Image (tube, rainbow, N blue to C red; front, side, top):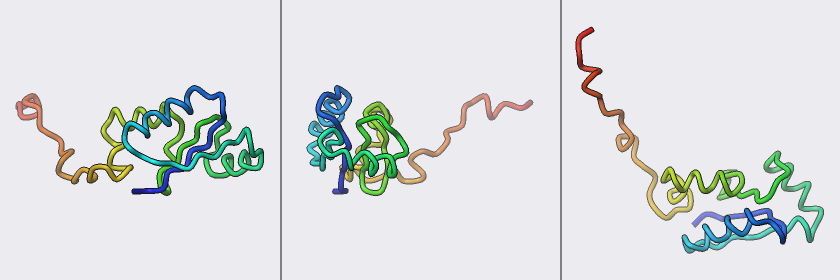
Length: 105
């Protein structure tokens, strides 16, 4: 399982949602509270180039905030990033031809 780091504050509803999503998936993470350690603000800014929380990192991948992570989940791309399922094979996303593509022009 990859290391998950989440920069948060104590009163952030999106931070709570992000933690709930990861918890439902059985994941553990390191929470870095920028409201309790202001030195972490600069660290978060350097890593993410964003000022809002949460900022979520899965391994070396900067996922972004809760909305970004929820979108990855909806697209089926979060579980492979978390190591819960294997990544899709290149042929799994192959383009299927539409009948209109076969019609002569």
